Image (tube, protein in one colour):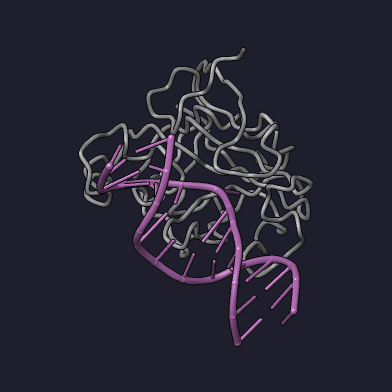
Length: 191
DNA sequence: TGCCCGATTAACT
DNA sequence: GTTAATCGGGCAA
């Protein structure tokens, strides 16, 4: 039986937590699956929402680790992050893709899609499939409706440049499960 | 107050 | 490969 992840799991460097999340299991109200793609955002990183200091939108990032930071992207999608590092570090991990394992019927209905591969393969897509909205902003990740379990067994983690950003694009802070069919985009093979 | 643009997605050509 | 959809945050004025 996989071990349940508690808040202390997130009290480490975002660059340690992010790869450790690959292969972990996330459920939101019983719907979810295996995390196969995440990105790390440190407060010293120009691409991070917390880079310019606290605002109404990012305030939860400046709080203690183990809580959900949810924001609206492009005026139409929700994106889910896990706050990491000791309180005040304002660093978080963006959840980018999930391999669906539970609640497939619910996800298909919410997404209006049959193909399991496209249900959760992107930050906006997985929030729609899991029903994540502003209502989840600031909620603890070790309490309902969230359930998080550590990865069980071996997982091959690969890193690469982050997606959809214009700053610090050279940093290899996107992490994923090598060869997964559920990534939002494949990892480019190293040169 | 106004303007620009984004940690995206789906539907185009 | 390109682009519309869609709107709040952040910064300039």
